Length: 211
Image (cartoon, rainbow, N blue to C red):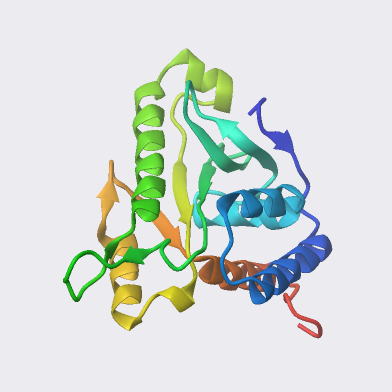
């Protein structure tokens, strides 16, 4: 994985960085995607923890920000396992009131937002490109194998901007929509925080003081 930089996870630093995310989300209602890119660029330990959305990753030890995926495609984060060669590719979108669902006409049920659809389509394009490059010399040169285990993660929106029904729709989409035999992991920034705190517990160091 020559394009991904080696990074030894520091669980103690990760605890601080995940706490930073909790404080960051607690102090801001609406945030642009560029703000999140800057946030995670400055916090490499929290960034690599996101890699565990791919169950094929046993140990997160490779990381890149704004990682090019063959040609014009680029993900905000790429996290890898140098042994299994599994990778997680992450798209960070914004976190405003229209990031997830929007009102359209007189319909009572809100529709998926253009922002969500844009991020979701980005991940689908990555899957297409990665499938197209599978079993090529270029794939082996990039990742060390001609076929890799990869997952796509879309982080978008806040829990507060969904009602109960919309939350269930998002969970259903995450669980049941399959793209080329793979699920796209869709989470809000609030869910991401919960998952990272759970991962810290898995590493044996709780996210909060006294944890």
